[in-house]
Image (cartoon, rainbow, N blue to C red):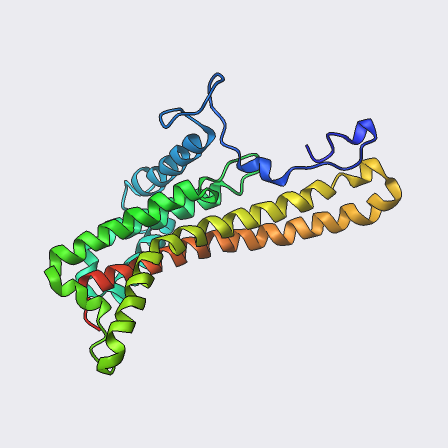
Length: 259
């Protein structure tokens, strides 16, 4: 695609956003909510990967763990400690929800780095379901656990009285912005990284078009792709971690709404 017009003398042509297109897996026609797509496929593969690591890979529960079991135990320990440190001991009972979010996002991000794959977390439709879904969960949990006392989350009792109503309005707005920022942050970072990778990848075949310029551009493009790819591996983990730790903060507010 990067050089699709090169043979016709039209120069270098590439479309870095094409990698984010949702396409049908079978047949042609419009895409409905029930249509199997490339996004459906890669989300299913992410779920199967998590299942393979945590169920199949750890089924022996050996005292000397295998590599797969070690990966599962490390992830379990990391997330469990995060939940306890941020949300407190009361939040540990909701560990399965947090762990599921972390593993799904991390695995989807990592699989999306395979050449020719698709990254569902680059789409706001996917991250919004995760962000708003968890937002609704913690809001319902907050009222179920605390009743009207949950509204204390928005009332800064330590502030001067004349400032409390203003702060309350700001806190309410901030609270309802949470799922939006939660969703956009993940999708935006993943999309940006993959777009940059695609742009540099488009310049790698320049040596086939112009040997003189290509001898300079192509090696630089390959070096840039290597560096950005390594960075994207780190970003894939960091974005899953950030999403999860923010989820723990929101869980903490639901369980302990008082300032």
